[in-house]
View 1 (cartoon, rainbow, N blue to C red):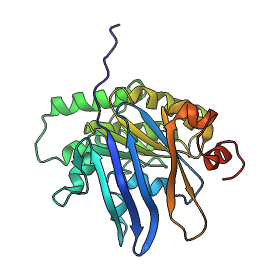
View 2: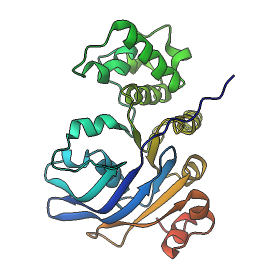
View 3: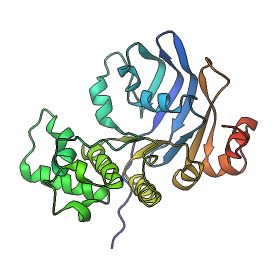
Length: 266
């Protein structure tokens, strides 16, 4: 079998990024470059801002009333927070997979995958739609399990299958970046390993950012790791250190990082 060459994905670069909920500064002064075709894990204790930062990348943070961002996030060379940037288009280019599997409850497996495509202004031929649904389900390692029941409800799948269905739905619109907020935290160990294997495959086509509390998952699944921390209640979260995953877990530059990954706090 001929190996498939990686598809050049896009980079994400945050510069002087501050994230607010109303008057409260939740995450302070983030500067990070997320490399294309790699998995970057965001780790840190609860409340340190890693999920808030993740959601800011595709402007989902600002869906919360009063929430806003200051600074810049570039998708390659395009500022997603530019005044003329369309948040809907940003979220099409930067897909999201949530912590709990969330298939659309009234939709079939097929329609779950096709949902984002059907929202587009351009009408897609049924044959093209069929091909995209199959490709997306194959990409999520789910096709062989569901190909004979595409018309059945997505909610009828197991938890691990539902999460892979959500990944297929996110990739069907061909985003440049995939954001994953603890995508395996609600799953059993076997399903968790299946998701981790899938993430490794998906980085051939996408830039992936994953939030995880699971240190083993971060060390297994990511190329780079960013450690966020918070100094105390009411204080903003901040990015302490980002480096290769191997270095973060074996020889971090910062004492805070070392204490966290060695289990001395958090």
